[in-house]
Image (cartoon, rainbow, N blue to C red):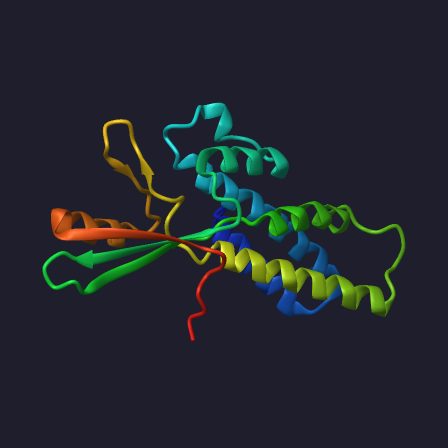
Length: 196
């Protein structure tokens, strides 16, 4: 039997699979996976922050997790774009992003609770269509939150070192090898640039 991954990206994939099933029952499972995926993404960001008290890195209540993230990063809904440039050639080597769980997505998590607990009566076709549209919207927002590979914006420690956590080990290894030959530039954006 295959294990049950509890990462946000795994929840996102299972939600996509349920939405693609296109059945009434699958919509409710998709809502559950989306709600879990939002919570887990927030926890993934908080867990990486060693400077936070353990109590601030735990929990399941979206408003509390959101408050703790805002206290840690003070970015609101802005995206952090980190560009690593070769010091000698001035050539960009890597562009990484921190993509937040936005306040909109946090509100949507609260709305998902209505669907997770089932309905009192069979929904009409129009109601099912509205639920599906909403779930697709939440899916798109959670997908964006999972696009970034940095678990928070870079933070400067009291000793002047930069704290930065990257999800993909290969990226972190490559950047570490380059060491002082790299300049990191950080921009804060209102939204993730399109990949077109």
